[in-house]
Length: 183
Image (cartoon, rainbow, N blue to C red; front, side):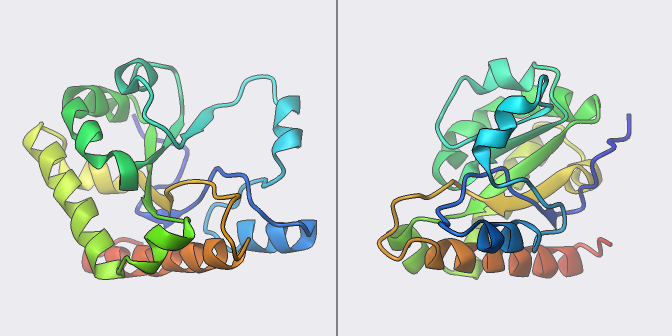
């Protein structure tokens, strides 16, 4: 089943932003391939959200079995745990759902010690585990998005590191889409 949500490692986020100015938050949200609404208090007006963003380590098996169109997760922090769910991820994707790989840290200290090459290597390592679990590479890439790992409201520089992280998400997307010849 083909997903209605474009994948191919385009960029998105489902996040709360630390911005004080609505215009700046919207500018950042609209800078991604698939924009999002950054004002969380408006989300309560949606009766049946079709996607979930998780910054913690919930029951992945439970979530992967839900009728979601998109699941956005903090893979940066939870990669080792998430590797264990290959069969559940395969079933999730077989029904056309999309995974958003939250790979770029938005926290000041974590972001400062990272490199784009390391993040790409980590992500491709996780994907390798999933290929071994029977997930086709072409399908995985076609039904994947890239995003920031978490929301970050406590940085000492407020929105500056978050903006840098969003720029990295876009750069990683560009690099990986070129590497895998994705449009």
